[in-house]
Image 1 (cartoon, chains in turn blue, cyan):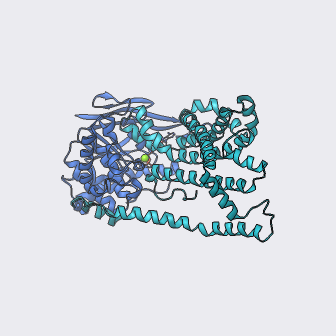
Image 2 (image 1 turned 30 degrees about the vertical axis):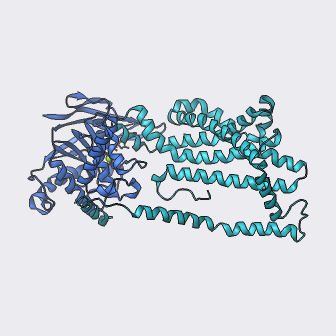
Image 3 (image 1 turned 90 degrees about the vertical axis):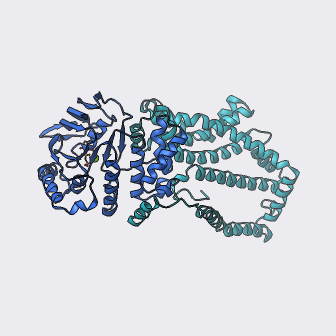
Length: 278
Length: 288
Ligand SMILES: Nc1ncnc2c1ncn2[C@@H]1O[C@H](COP(=O)(O)OP(=O)(O)OP(=O)(O)O)[C@@H](O)[C@H]1O
Ligand SMILES: [Mg+2]
């Protein structure tokens, strides 16, 4: 069963007065970010989105999260049109977005408060999550007192607290060093494999995509749409050492093959520094 | 950082230990604060010494500048007789009435202007024009319109203190990182909770700075207002001492003013620390 269905999604942004953008040769005041974006995601699936910078991946997550509306086309969540943030969705942002005036514990409680969960129950859930992420000793710390890796765990815990059916993760590990990143990937996959949560995960790292995903969806250069979907046929549960296997390399190769042309195209368009590498 | 993370992931298996270190830390902070504060003392002492020396050595006629010791003695007598306290309390009452009113009006107005672009578009021009008129220039007008009673004084203090509060509330609201709003919305927060739990705490640091400036202005304005038309208050006391050539009393009054300013500032710095402890250690210096 498909929990998320995006059909013929288009998204344009009106730019500020005087700003212009080149949409395939046509100069315009509107930027076309998504064009004919179709994607179906199965319940319980771990779907990873990869694509060049500026291809509209974050914009798509916002649409699924109900934080912005498509210019045309539709996004369904559990057969219902997404029009506002749903309480079935959790969102983890690239910038962590923890509330700096709340402790780790109380950050995790935030979403539960809106749902009217009693204080005692909130604290219980938040403590469970902290311990799941190995942060039990840090519940009273404010974000500035936590390392980047710890902050990102709290952010993930906060999104998980409301037991979302759909978890949106926008490059959650991008700002972390390589070791912390692998540790968190392992933790995430361990936690996720014990649930039936659907995840949409955006990343620029092909390794990360292959390690985590059931399927990797490759987004084209802007205006973004799905170019290719690659099924990752690695067994689960996945352990860290799978990264050095031959199957892993084969999958990696497939994803890069689909992505390469788009990244090159985006680079020509945007003169961006190379983000991907093989 | 990695090490920290690894330690953290092990921490999940450890039993929770009682955090004694936090008490030790609090003590350390206190010491550090005192230490920082005490570094300012030598210069103040030098200042007092020069003050004492100038009239004593005959550089300045003691009739115009009594020695520091005379001033302190006068101040002491005034405190003991309770005379000074009366005036101080009256001034503080007026200042806090005006300041309190400013908070009640300017902060909510600032939230409206900061959050609703439309509201700001309609009000901005008027606000910008009014705020650039010196409060002291308006003093006579307030006295003329509202008379010599309490209301004119409170009104002018309110007026003077409002602008900083208003401006700082607006900029506090405007500089909220949109990612917090987005994060809160993604967790299905209601409008009221969005205000209460995100917009308000996020703008508090800026508002507190506005409040500190506003409080300073309140103190300055109350003295000026009392000098023009009042029968009580520290401003009146200083002015009156001057008219009657009670020079030591006048200096004692001025010294009180300085002490009062210092006290109010400490109070507000303390409040700032209390409410924005989540911001880390880059906050304002203790002498602000
Ligand atoms: N509010 C907005 N107004 C105007 N343009 C926008 C807005 N939000 C996004 N865009 C534009 O949409 C395009 C896609 O943005 P988006 O953030 O979705 O890219 P992305 O695929 O997530 O890129 P990255 O991998 O670098 O995060 C960009 O060109 C960006 O400039
Ligand atoms: Mg993005």
